[in-house]
Image (spheres, one colour):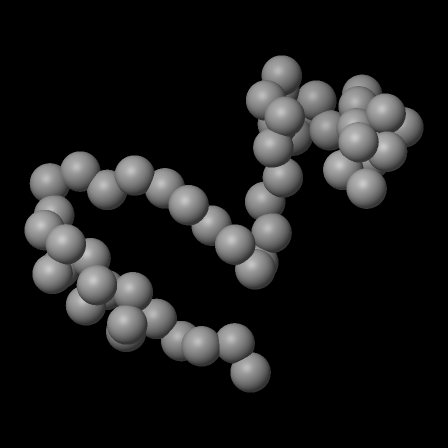
Amino acid sequence: MVTLIVKYFSDHLTQFYGQKSLFWTGSYFIATCGGVTIKQLKKYVQKQQSPV
């Protein structure tokens, strides 16, 4: 699916993402966190609202 999107809409995607081959979704996110402990990170994640 992603391959087809990139194939047919690469010019449009470049406007938003540049040359990066990535997509942002509401269902998954990953990032790095510097300067916090695992305990602090877990507490932050647990306080986030769950999807309905």
